[in-house]
Length: 314
Image (cartoon, rainbow, N blue to C red; front, top):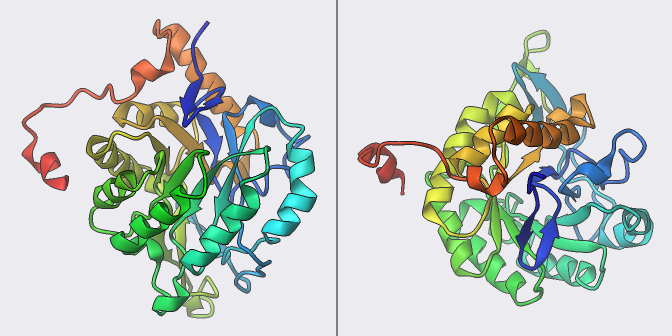
């Protein structure tokens, strides 16, 4: 038997493959389409205190080897999620991680407080790539001190796994990872989408209603691998690797560079069972190569110790 499970802050997950927030609805949408119980965990669509309509269309655009999105954190609100979604999610054996989005630090805290008593919610992933309305709309996640403060405030409210999802749209993501580790985060997710845009030449207008959006998919994988490698070398807490994972080989590359687990995102729009196939593929790789515990693959990348350029990242 291959050991695929791992434990984070007292919660055991059956394997290291999760579906990323915003790519699998609230977790209930794909029941019947795929064996969701074969996943390590489902990370929900971002939840805010009140329902949000999100941005006007067009808000999803296909690009070369990727996808741009500008959904605008559309969601039903945390109270309706608890009332309408959690009862069905409680019938699943896979763990549910609630993703939280907010426009103020106080809202982050309020949403977590609503979810904290719910036994079906195994932990929290915090989306800090949200616009901070008190600071003119700039993202929380591009301000290291604010990201640390969010972590500090939320850590006091829960003992469940607290995962901070970091933006790549900064100079050194490792600085932010160190900051949230110091404030008690149990793990970080690396990375959120990159800022990008597309143009409709027929109209000579932006393809997205918001002009720019978040780029995801296979096109970003090399960047994501580098960001995960940088982060894993800088902190001791686990890193969830995200970015362009479509196959088991992709996921294994993230584990080798230092990710403790992975999240499958854009691939879910093509095939809602992509994560299950990836989890199975990791097991098959381990069998073929005599690996008894997936954890032995984590950070196993062979590099020269004198690469000063890489050291300079940290």
